[in-house]
Length: 76
Image (cartoon, rainbow, N blue to C red; front, side, top):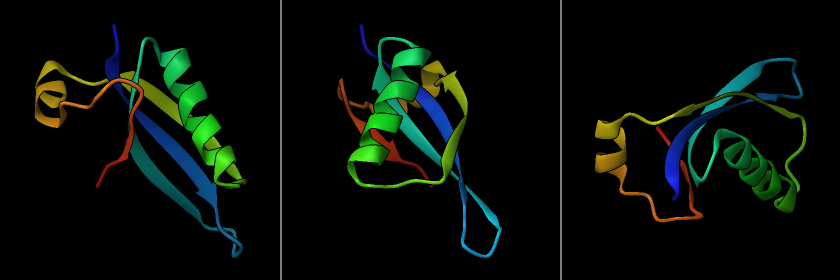
């Protein structure tokens, strides 16, 4: 069963600043969520990032977002 996971990725800019973006990733486990986000970023040739955190979304967040299985959504 697919569940939504909130995933934070940290990106380094050219001027040595850090940017954090949160994604909602539909996956079967937190490991699969991290792998799916990495696969999508590499597919878009995005480099210089680190996945910092992967946590399951709360029941309320899951009900609000209603993310389809296998989907990745940028939050915020």
